Length: 178
Image 1: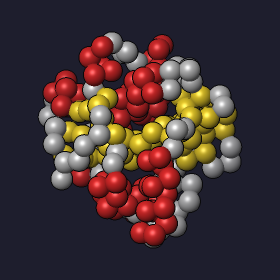
Image 2: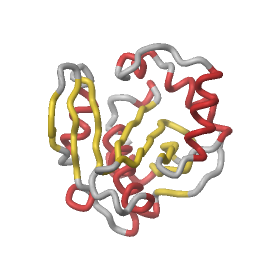
Image 3: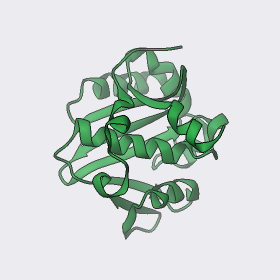
């Protein structure tokens, strides 16, 4: 798929309870666990409690990245005192195709809509996760500090991404497509 076609077909929808199995499978993917701050496998019980709390939260928004009718990733915005933290993952079959970068772009748009007072987005990336580092850097995010095992990226969506009406329209309501 060409880049422009890829971007046109992608959109975010709000996660719903019916996404539970998809989200757990993605979270427990070997590469996702390796790129997570906690590499332990997640049980269904733990995941279900987390998802219920997340879906009811006023400070966390969970989205599903859709390519037309196919769920291909998840993204989360967590409102913090000084901005919004982005976290995301893409299904194994779609990694390496620029989908992570597009998901970060869409999450940046979502922040402007859902948490307009946040101002900046942050991404915490393990130093071993070169693909995510590149995605944030390609969108103009900068490293604001480094720890021993990870880096924190910061970006202002207003400065670094297209925030036109077309972009905002790609962030939609709930619903579930299997």
